[in-house]
Length: 116
Image 1: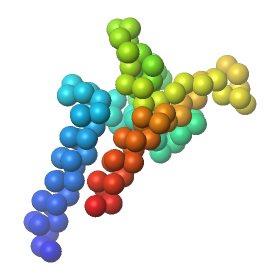
Image 2 (image 1 turned 90 degrees about the horizontal axis):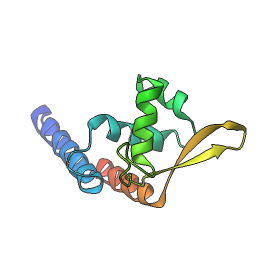
Image 3 (image 1 turned 135 degrees about the vertical axis):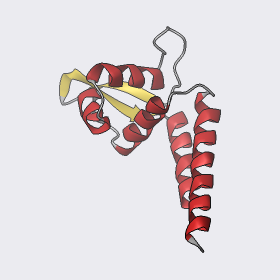
Image 4 (image 1 turned 60 degrees about the vertical axis):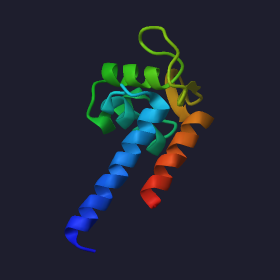
């Protein structure tokens, strides 16, 4: 396969990834929020500060993105329901994020595309 063919195939996969994310999360999903979902899947069970550091984002920005991905959006509307907020059993002042069954379904769809 030529380099051009490889690039075309990679871009097709990228397009399928974006399409899958948009169909699950909505057409207007910001790329940063989708990136936060991927980071949370890779680092399940860690908190806002650690995720913000890994994303190169502020704690405030990461908190907003995680809230959107969990139970409610910033405007009070229902959130995407892909992550669950729980109290860290090792530090009761901290919140950790885990992937919900709905989030696992999306994660598996994304992995399937990458492995195709």
